[in-house]
Image (cartoon, rainbow, N blue to C red; front, side):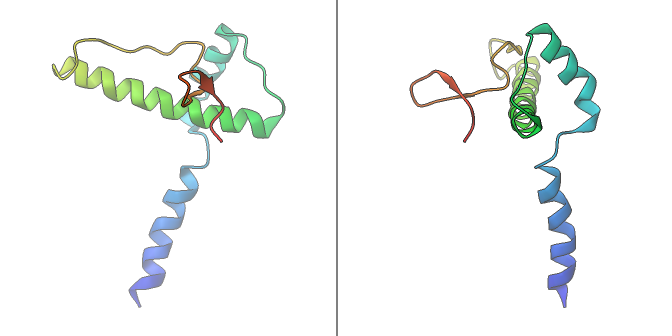
Length: 95
């Protein structure tokens, strides 16, 4: 009988990974405005937003580790924040 309880706990967590974090709305809007970003519809923007959030989380974690002495350099968000690094080293849309 534990199975339904497990599903009830895991489904909301999985769905949350597919939705943009509302607490980052202002930061996302400022980033888009700063770099003059425009997207081809809502689905494209949501996909790019999720990539941007993942990159922002990575940057923040890295910079926290830098503050703890783990790394010798800091990272910062730039105009490529809505892209992922492809196999050829060039930013690409996450597919």
